[in-house]
Length: 333
Ligand code: UFG
Image (cartoon, rainbow, N blue to C red; front, side, top):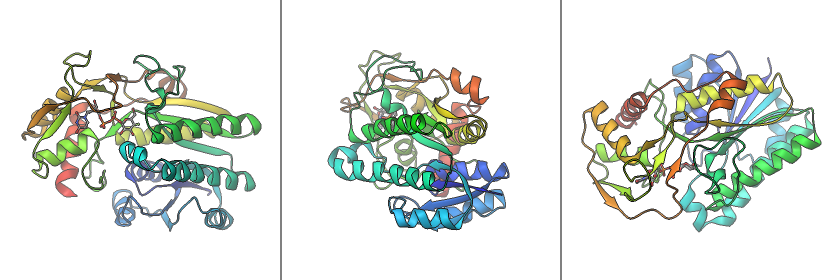
């Protein structure tokens, strides 16, 4: 059987996707340089699924390494997760972000062309919608005006993929715009491990509940939202992983470029998240209102119709599941 290559497959979303692909009977090869993940994730994926993915420690910006992977394996599709993803860091290190994120995508695509590998699934982000229009964002909503280099790399790679799909109509490319992935596998064996002080809300909440951080800063309570705090479309990472399997199944039956939002379609405020987390897990999360964080928008949630109609996929887990699984992982990791 031909295999699915997951670049960055040892990371948060990649590892959960590996589990779903293996559970669906797919062969999985993970190529990851472990710059933001740990090799023990491979054992954990095996514990969960009973199957061991092939693991190759590799930087997929290195063309000779990627060529060697394709030359020695029968790869029918790539799910491309590899890339730098910290918004704040991208502002401080723009060149590193543009170089790494564009190089990895281009190198993998060029190698796929040489080996006539036709299916490409890309991790994009709702950040490409910027503040061009108001939520809910549909796939047709305007993109651009990104507020940081990380967002621009996603935007630019989307352009590269549109051009690639046009030039090579036999290819099938799915651009997946993630909203806010949170939670962890219900086994408690895999989840998100942020480096240092977390930037994102949920890891900050779990670390505060665990006593690692003193209190959560709520960035702004004067937005035009239900309670003044920022509203986001949080999606359970296992639902998101299943969205990749659905996109792969779709790409294998179709050609061309398709963009899909992967979100729930529902927005929750920061204070709603804090209150749900406290209630579900029966723990305290001390917080204080702080100034707005530069670059944040008031509301970001998906119009989730297209994925439901074309992929037959929708998010099934609710906020309680997300809070419970995130806390279980925090206590295990
Ligand atoms: N927030 C706080 N305190 C914190 C952290 C976050 O109040 O300590 C608030 C933010 O102001 C925002 C909400 O919680 O209102 C969510 O913030 P996150 O940092 O968790 O997520 P963002 O929506 O800012 O960004 C996420 C990903 C990006 C991606 C973007 C897509 O981190 O990679 O979604 O919209 F680009």
